[in-house]
Length: 199
Image (tube, rainbow, N blue to C red; front, top):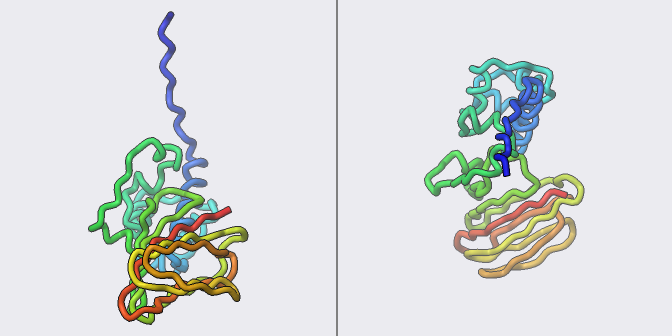
């Protein structure tokens, strides 16, 4: 049989890159819980420019794009490449990668275990709650659910008016399109693994 002709990869258009960049920046900012002002402060890019990028109305320079990537702890390539291009690669998140820790305070530390540069319908987190600490969240998109497994300690899950207690080894799932919370009910740190699934 004759050899099949090699397929030539199709380069994305500048418009497609800008569209992907706008969606990626908005998604990453939302994942971090950052406002436009906070991203502007972290990146050195003006709020108005970031807004234009997210609305796919801007054609940012390489310098601007690099600053945004650096603010998220990503390389320039990781920020602009499509999710499809990333799918066939092995991506490793090292325990020492502080860029994956996007919220840390006296109550809790949240570490992302899924790649930050992927637009995704599933997110995976490691959440460490201090004694008395709580992670309270506003409703996510309609249909969103969270799945939680307790690795250490004990927690209370709150989902709208419903509550339940979990201890080490227990797992639970609950609606996350209503106000919800994970509360440490023990006297030591609680460590949980959290999966968020968007419908």
